[in-house]
Image (cartoon, rainbow, N blue to C red):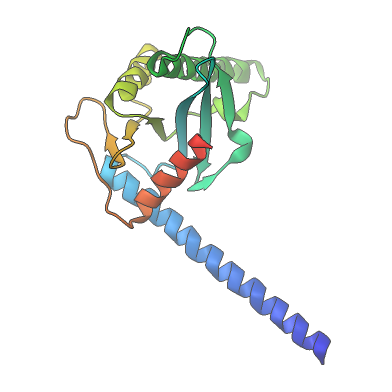
Length: 197
């Protein structure tokens, strides 16, 4: 009898977990469509890449790239970039270097695919939404890099300003502030927190 009870409990727990997970799936879908609407994207941002620059005691800067797919972290896609070309802490130039290297790798992956070599999945696909941690200054650098690769039409980009979690878009003065407690805002916060870790 005890065994049967334990088995029934286990099944109930599994069902509860599944329900919770499916509810979350809905939340993720909701978050993605909220972002799509707010940012006027043509499709939900199924692949979001976020970039952040961190300085360790002023010596070396590191750029981090985090990737969310369908609203959940895809940790095997995360990458770090040791800043090579920038002397001293300069987050703007560091961001430019990181994004340039990222899209160079995308270009290389396209060429490899033609030759039939399997490219690094982190870089072979373009993001549906590119997020840079930082406001208008960082956004400006990201736009510059995208333009240099002819990707401004293909890759939507936003800058996330720290204070009110405002989202800035290229060439638009007003920021977007997502509603408090909205799924879209929670997703943006999770992406940013991952990039900071």
